[in-house]
Image (tube, rainbow, N blue to C red; front, top):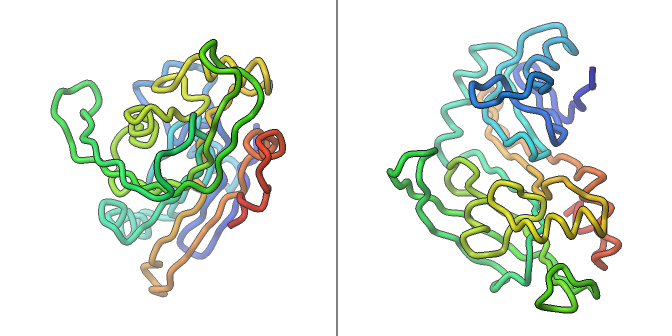
Length: 238
């Protein structure tokens, strides 16, 4: 049974750096009988029940925050619907981003319904590169960008869908991504992971009123791409 790395803990709350492939909790949509669930793993690891305060997708790694009791959960969880809690992500995406800093404002359908919901994603381009390998038959080289992302809204798969909308697909995204790019990374880098990481989470502590910032170390499968991309690994520690 894997041990989940604790990266923050106080009397009321704790956070883990969720590994890619681990689900937050059981869902009727998940059919894998061998799936690992963070809620159950933490209960076994810590010896007491924990309460997830938000969710990140199964293939996404990074900060996942829990309450240690139902009272602490009820004090903080409603704030995730507002703007006082900030979640920043890192992603590797196809192509050169058109701007250094911009907003993607594009409504998204809720689940399988046709009703559109407002969705806004902010991004900052941290680095760009062109590597001398063809990922498609159109060009002899391939371009990529490392981006920091702040979703202003919390729609399902929002980041992945928004970057797909502007055709700068998140590498490794098998649902909304570019299959040619995914196959290229598998073939050339032996990498099949989604290159999306929940990097930082900032929240106002309900008890102390202090602003708490938690940063999750970028996983090895993401980190080892920095050298072949020609990027300074310190970009992952900003």
